[in-house]
Length: 424
Image 1 (cartoon, helix red, strand yellow):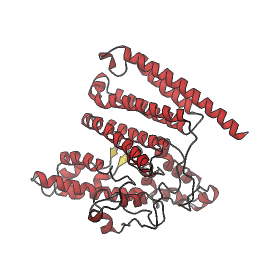
Image 2: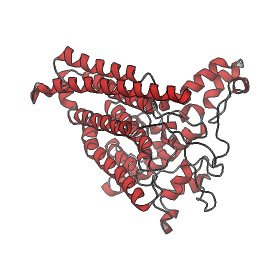
Image 3: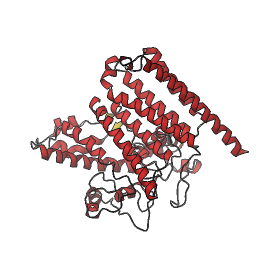
């Protein structure tokens, strides 16, 4: 937990710089692929994901440690060989967990956030799930476990394998020659993120593209079929927490509403998008049928709102950085404090992304977040150990909570007046 937090202190600013560089490069070249609100939503999703991971909010059905102890047939000694095997084994497991996430209703909920952006850029790579509480990943690490690859090696290689999937989420790199036959390239992954009928459910590979070629899911990017991005049932929100549970909520409602007892149970493991016939007829959902002619999700936003959302995001990044850099200190104060901090982070993301959606309840969520934060300060007399530097820090944070409440209230009022003018 603490080590991963330290890694993220380096990774987060690096990713942010690269995301902003892509925005600058696109504007300079006259091919801007990054919309501001979409970028903030993606970065906010990344914050929720890494916070969940640092807090360890997931359960593995089978742990890799257990697998190695029970089924290892040998133990590879060569340090170079064991790391290569671990990387390939992780990629094999990644292919299958990724494919399952796309092909079955229940598991799609764990992955929908990653495909929810209607753009394709480095920022959307950071849209990662907080809904995947139960993990099945270790099951597909059987080859590594049989060879006795140490759990510590897998733990070291796993973040590298994950970070190596960031760079190819871009539209600024075209075909890459002979590398197209070896690794996943931006061209391959553009296909994967596309909702064109020709591209759906293709190119699941994460690092090496040969898994798709081996298991029959490979598709080239076609010159006459430009990829269109998103999901066929668009999420229609900037709020990443809502997106994470949107599909699950639909499954629950459909399971309750259907009169067919069999459908109540089989809906969970049916192909992604399947709905009981009686429910689909009575409660139809909008689905994109013509991928080249549909309106991308957007919300009316003034320059002031764009700026304010960035201010909120940067402030939250500072809060999160403090958490990741001081996990041991916060734990020493009280082992439950890091979960309080995590809840504060989630409330903050929920509040300002609701404002981005122009939701009238944004002020309520902002108040809830700030009252929760203020409650922590009044209850503990501190903000998670900042008194060691200066007692005024907690008071400055309290002042920040008051300022954000006032500014959010002003924006909500402005949006109400604007909406009334549109209705009239």
